[in-house]
Amino acid sequence: VQLVESGGGLVQAGDSLRLSCEVSGNTFKINAMGWYHQAPGKQRELVAVIARGDGSTNYADSVKGRFTISRDNAKNTMYLQMGSLKPEDTGVYYCNAHLTTRRTYWGQGTQVTVTS
View 1 (tube, rainbow, N blue to C red):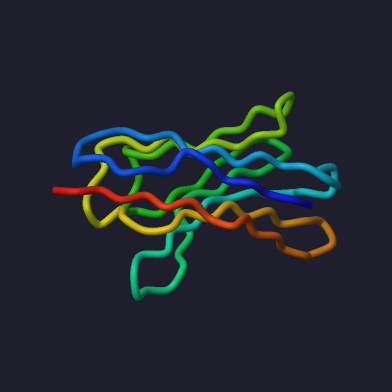
View 2: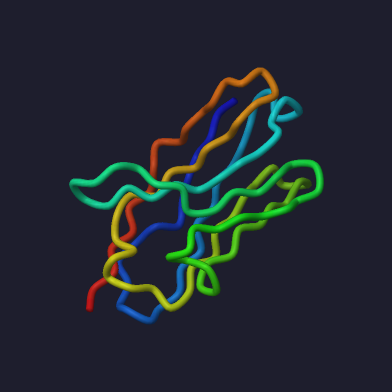
């Protein structure tokens, strides 16, 4: 499985941004996908996750109501719509895929910088 993120950039507080994660390879083995955020000097943390089967979603408390995770199965792409961005949202965002084989794959990350 290969994951390629895109869509990061430099924005101002209050702006919106949409991240994309294009998936290729053995996608039929994926049972869940998610977005993680790694702020400068901090550990990587889960932002949002979406299940492959029923499309159910879960979010970190810090982004509830501001971010939306979604997928387009026809395009093999997952998205993270980010709204009302805050400076603390700055960091690298990674796409993650969890397989039925219990293996996990990561993308290379995309940088998001939010200025106040």
